[in-house]
Image 1 (cartoon, rainbow, N blue to C red):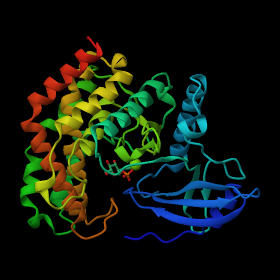
Image 2 (image 1 turned 135 degrees about the vertical axis):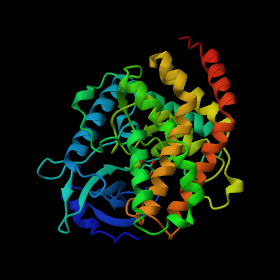
Image 3 (image 1 turned 60 degrees about the vertical axis):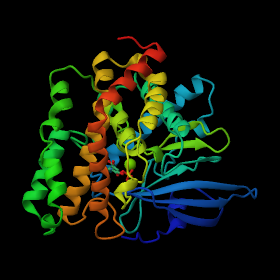
Image 4 (image 1 turned 90 degrees about the vertical axis):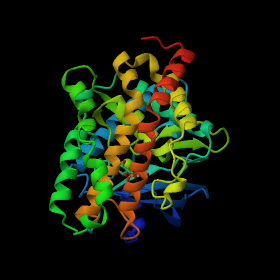
Length: 376
Ligand code: GN1
Ligand code: MG
C-alpha cells in the first residue's frame, strides 16, 4: 500500500518550522507509520532536515498518551545526556511543539503528525552486515535501558496493552486461524502448525512475570537494528529512535527482539529461505554489547532467560505476521499479497534454528558474562 504524499508545507508551518522547502523523501522502512524527511533552507541559507511522521492511529489508538510517553522519555534522556557531557542534539530526539504547545498536529485530513529534528551525520541500517555494527547497536540499546532505569514506570501509559504478552499474542493468532477471514488458511497449513505446536513456549516469560520472578522495566519494545542511528564516521550507535512503543515491559523483550531482527543472515522478508540462518556470531556480538552497558543492572533470572528471549520474540513476530496474513493484511504494510507470509516464514526458520542451537546460545551467553565479569 502506497501512502499519499502529505502537504509537508502545512505540517512544517504547524510546527513553526520556517524557510524554503527544498526536498521531501519518504522513509519506507517502518511497517506502521508514514515517515518523511524534509529538507528546508532557513533564512541564513543553511539546510536543516526534519523528520515528520503521520502516526497510524488505527494501530496507536491513544496517540496523545503515546506522545506524552515520548516527550517524557526524551526529556529524561536529554538530562542524562547533558549530565554525561554528551550532545543532546544528536544523542536524543528533539520533539517539536505546535503553536498550541502540543507535541503533535492534526492536519485538515485528520492525520496525526509529529515532527523531530533529523539527526545529521548519522544513518540507520536495514540489515546486520558486520558483528561490530550489531555490537554497537547493542551498546545503544543497553545504554537506553540503563539511562531509563530510574524513569518513573507508573507515569508511562500502556499505549498498546499486552504488546509483547506472548500468551495473548498466541490467542490472537489462534483466533486468526479459526476466523480465517482471508480464506488463506489452506495455503499455509505447515506454518500454522509450526506456531500452534509452540503454545506452551508462549507462557514461559508471562508465568515468570506473574510469579514476580522477572521485573517490569521501562522498555523500548521495538529494538530493531534500524531503530538506532549510527554515526557516519565512527559507526557508534548514538541515538535510539522510534519511541512509540516505550512502555513497561521485560528487558527480555528488548534483547529478544534485537536478536530476532539482527542475528539473522537475511532480511526479515527474504523469499529464499536457504539464505535465512540464525547467526551465533551476531548473537554473541549483541550479547556482549548489550550486557557491557546494562548487564550489571539485570537480575540473575533475566540473564538466565536471555538465550530463550530471541526465540520467543521471533516466534511472536512470526505469529503476528502470519495472523495478519490470515486476517487479510490489515495491520502491517505490505508490498505484495504474500508479503506477510514470506515474513512469517523467515521468522519460523529462525525459530527452528535457534531451537537447534539453544545449547550453544546458552554457552555463548555464559562466556560473555564471564568475559565481562558479570557474576550473578
Ligand atoms: C512494526 O513499523 P515498525 O517497523 O517500527 C511493529 C513491531 C514489529 C515490526 C516487525 C507498533 O515496527 O512490533 O516487531 O514491525 N510495530 C508495531 O518488523 O506493531
Ligand atoms: Mg516501531
